[in-house]
Image (cartoon, rainbow, N blue to C red; front, side, top):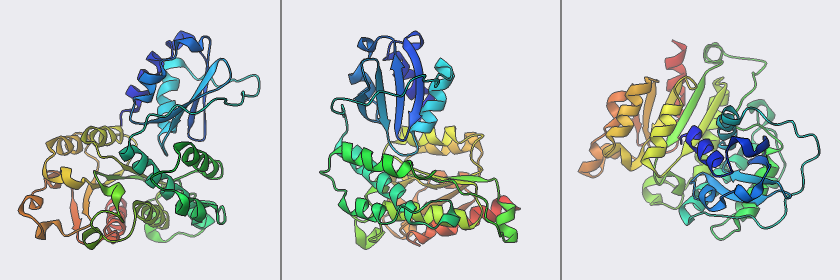
Length: 329
């Protein structure tokens, strides 16, 4: 995802820089106070894939709702465009009116999976950097379904994000020699199309574990190995994956990549990896080299220093371990 483009698109459709009084973030939301709210084009903003909804805030403001791990990045780009305007002199007005939502079933499924994964991390112990919320996370993830109202998903996610900083791990009091060597390193776990459907998609091939299980595994293993940050991102769109690889330049020290079906078709992903020159490991849940002939082709492989296949979700664990070893040398 190109966060700068998202921020620019939002600014263009709220009346420009001159119409912005203050801007800040709250949980999953970009909160903006405006001189003239009549200049807001909600349809154009809602059409962005990354936007889950729009909530009116008083007579002169809006909140734009994003999925997990997106709002911080969008706000950074937005603040560069308008300047940091978070000096709200009075308490923010309570939102009123229904949330304006533009979300396809695929985007709902992806958001639900990421929300479940994020809330699932609250069950991790404090030493992993995630604080427990008791039974809330497990109850919420069990209750979420394809027909749930998106507002309830956002509200639940807000509650979780208010209580922890996701995908960030504080330094432990005790380290092994290996965890000391990968301290201050950041990794990006990037997944392509249909990975958000784990647990539903051909379980005889991909197993019964879910995308939430995958993210929890990655966060847990990265924390154990001393990584400062492990960010997980999934998209069904090739361009989004290219954007994420480009955005990783200068931020992440390593990439764990499962391109899904784009493994066999995407020269664009290969070119993006070559451009940023970030160490990358290719991962596949199934043994792709023993399946259909077309799955034996991997364009991204020549940009990766290791390929792991056929280990199920444990392949991600091994990839994170291999990346830690690689970065510690």
